[in-house]
Image (cartoon, rainbow, N blue to C red; front, side, top):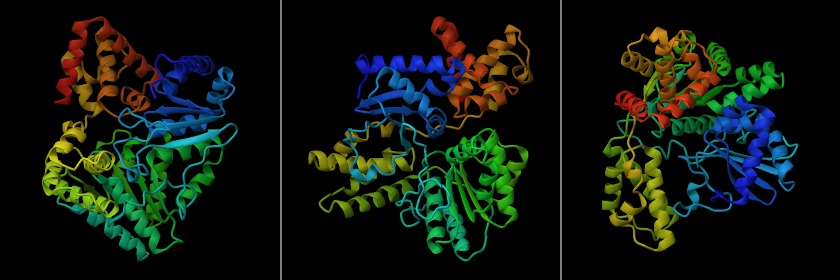
Length: 478
């Protein structure tokens, strides 16, 4: 739903103004600046945010204040829903996506929560989980995982972990699986959870995303129940942590302590992240050493043979649901050759082709694939950029030292390069503002936010300055 220029847009502007006055500029900029209104439907206010952690944090800390701000403008609003935008898009509550069939909707990588006035946020819990693990996707099992040279070592390690757990023993510990986005890390962690939990229902197998871990830790501190949270963690038999790179702040220390306790107690731990342990900036040396001391397994980019095997497997699954469907071999070859980004895009490719066929009746051909998959064919894997690289490149470009960038010096010759380095760290990495601040001499996140805004302002006012920053961005990215 497009809200621009309508009454809802004006209402949302007034609500945001009330929130700004209620929480102050710093808090508003940190937590509400990227909060968007999707739609108003009866008593429901549907909002969206770009990350799952932001969704959990706002719901656990500011839900009542948001509802109060809405009700000050519109008494009908009683319910708040927040969903996570995927690639900048959010699906309207009332309008399903036309290009994707129904079976694609369940595992969409979004988080949503509906809160009624006075209600408390509760995490999704799979039957058989301990207190509150993250939800598992029933389609992500070993049977549906497609093996190839890029992932065979990671698959072998995951299966061996599951088999050892079923025999009440521990194999490699901890196991750390790393790769860029969409290559199967989450699939393997889900598969281990299903296999290990299915073997013995009494076994305490918990799958947690990093943002879910942080949510529970922060909630426990706020409720003054941190001891109970620690006891719960130490009672886990198999702990699976996904998206390790998003773990931030004191929750990193808490995870490190839980990891040590679980390993000492011969409990199995499996972690997945977007880089090896020595590539995660927020880890301290002790935790980095603990993770590196186990089995560290990479998943490489998918080669064409593996991409072809994946699309064939997904096509077989689609055919089982739509018996009249026909996807020619040359179309599968075409998809495997052209969609080179990652596994999720390959899954989405088949879903789009099925949806196009079922909704329009048009046969699945290469011409249909070109139209339906145009945006996926332009995607490419991007190199993971580190804050340290940005600091070195900026320091060299402006002829200052890296220690100067991290120091408290306030001379213009240092302040402007430091602000540009902070801006590029925000633009080119997935690190949070607090994490970037820590990497620049333990500065507060508000300092980073000021730097980002200052550079954006200068770029809009000075074309030569904007070109210089863009040049630095390209040099770092290349």
